[in-house]
Length: 445
Image 1 (cartoon, rainbow, N blue to C red):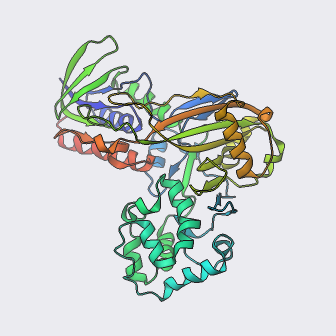
Image 2 (tube, helix red, strand yellow):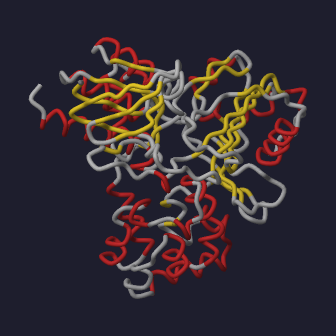
Image 3 (cartoon, rainbow, N blue to C red):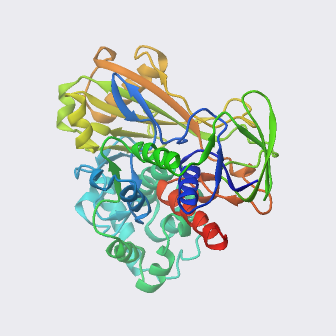
């Protein structure tokens, strides 16, 4: 018998377990794999320690920064380089992302940096937004439909598809505006146009960068969470798979094949219900990291990176991050080498039922198909020619998002993590801490 069982050792599980144990609860955390942190882990490429996946967190709330401060990392919170990112349109044009937009929706349709992307005709159509009655598009089922009705196809295809689609890995026609842009509908109805609504939301947002990172890598959050769990004596069980989860019982199987039932007052889970079949065709992300010795990249030709229209010809990557431009601390650590991270959409090609969704970093030969594809795309996106002989190291990481078709949990089980809150460290941390706080408030510990 224990106070709380936490199923899953990703960031959500670590945050919840740490807070609960700090508050006096006896906590058992079970993780099917042999590692903690989920996708917030490190790998080493060309001798350089790098974040394996997420290298930043959104600042729309202070959830992650507040946690970082509590963990002793407050002095190491950093903001990205201010040069900003670029985008590539469907027809291969490149331009800096306009400065005053929201998910690609411009607040000033006739601004020079907007016209550089959508052209004069597209700008005039977008400007008509100010003449339309405010209810037009206000009940749109998707962000794409809302933008299409208010500002036209050009804004949608050239700006919102690569930017909003790149951020959320989904076409805007499948994005709920209330989830990705809370308050946008209300601001449209109140202020009379979509452009003014964007301006109003931006004016209310906290000043500063939309994202932040940690000097040395976001993975340092996991390092400190794990250290705290040791201090507060969380019972961590790796290689232990939950095979049945209810509100008070968790059946687990260890690496030795032995089965045990854990009984708890409360159960939190960041994984899908193990009794249900997981979808085998989930979309996923493949991240290819290149460490490149090419002085011509010192000029940061595309700022901190690029978002790419999914139908751009001749480019397979959907995004590129020039990490050594984005993070000055990383540039200092690489001794003049450049770190490029290219993202690709992929699908699960195996039955992943009851398999732990833990990605592994695999070395890549720059001359093999994965390496040559990444080099070719990087050259196209950055406009700087270099060959595979300039690549000092490469690695590939592939992972899949939460299986929301199988995320239903038994009655009484508290859901935390991506399957419940969606992607993004800010939401994951907030929900995990809120769940832990509710349990501590209700419990007599």
